[in-house]
Amino acid sequence: MTYKDCDKPLNICIALNEFPNELIDRGVAERISPEEAEEILNIANEHGLVNQALYIDWLKGGVFNICSCSPCFCMYLRAFLNYGVKHHIVKSGFKSIIDPEKCTGCETYVESCIFNARSIVRGKCVVDEERCLWMWFMHHFLSHMSSDVCRGQSIKWL
Image (cartoon, rainbow, N blue to C red):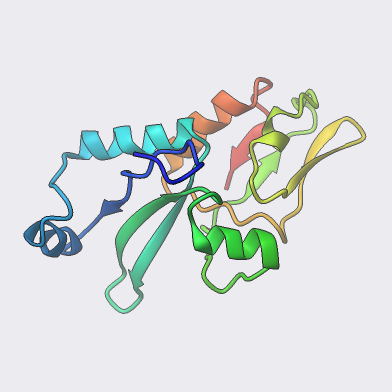
């Protein structure tokens, strides 16, 4: 399933904690295994989608939804990219660190950032921390994505 002129997959939101029960009862969701959830996140990664934790209960410490978004169908990403509206988007707490000794300046990592937070300066990738709103939340996905995107293995996530 896609949205209008967008070629990105849509049916990839993941409800967590008690939230899925309500959605399943209403017939708008189905129960999936952890392996199926991981596959959904892999599909999102392959399509360059941004994973966001939505509907966070700060008191209980729970996340109720993981949404994998693209600017072609996500109003929150579009509002940020087009108008600089940030209050719907929360940074993940991860930080992208580029090892200049290993960076080859190939630009692949630059092109993969929808936030335009990466650029090549003097032949090396640099990250604009102000624009970097990376929302990935699972370290093994970050490591996997980094190896796919950066041939020189110059990226670390803190």
